[in-house]
Length: 437
Image (cartoon, helix red, strand yellow):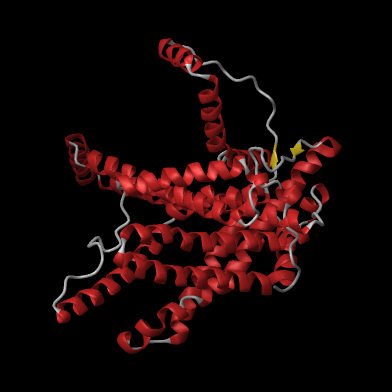
């Protein structure tokens, strides 16, 4: 744990101007994109929903760049994957890192409520523009502009078709990457973000519907009544139950959040421990055999194309599972120490927020807080985000060092090419600038 702290300090001391600039750049681009998407969404909900993923993508680009800036200071990683000297290869690998990081980052973004915050900001902007358009239409005696959906991001046949088209185009780009112009790589990143964003929206809607259906079942009402009866009869038991619920919620957040950050870093750096080869288990049964028979009856060309699409889809999850395996094999001491350090970081962040508000003191809500609140509350993230990224990168380098030391010269750390499952091979990571942008 001491080594992780020392490395984080060196990385922060050497690269904090670049980390700060990249973080502020991501925040600024996100704000501009939401403003533009909200303006467009007031006229067309579909067009606005196509621009909205760019706001999340801006944060991801900044995060990937921040992680790669620290690349040249991670000794264990450099020992097994030196930085390439070719500029074209570095650019290509940066795109690969973005493509590999979109899925885990979007999942993390949605799970921790950041996607909801962006959606609220987008909807607020749409409503502002829509209100102005309605007022202008009323004064002019004309019909209001826009499609009347107020930029609502919903799943419709049109948005589903867009998501499917984005996935297919992204797959075609990957298949014919070498023959296509290099500039289309930017479009591939956008297409990946679009279809994953709509997939996240669909999954959220489905889970929300399932949760609402379960909550309205009679059995849930009976369970709630039973719990209330027991709580009223045995007050200490109710206190214990509520305490367990609170503890599980807090522990889950404390443990899962730092692991999520470390997983994203592992996917971006693209290095994972190769699992021991295990023969796949054959699943048998009547339904499975019928499915296999139907699969074999398909024409060879159809099977080949479907296999390519399925392989492309599964490859997005491979870097995540490999990174989780890497953390597992690193041992509980190192990972536990990292979680403890991250918890201390969260405590420091909360303390700074508490102290900042009291340092500013009481002011009028309308004349002061509504005008300056966003700028004031940006101070703490600006101070803490470079420290967070440095801690995550140093912990990942510590994991690599622990595994390399335990395996010696016969390390099982493996590299993978650009077209393999792990598209962000850190052997081909972009060369990180040192010090400043």
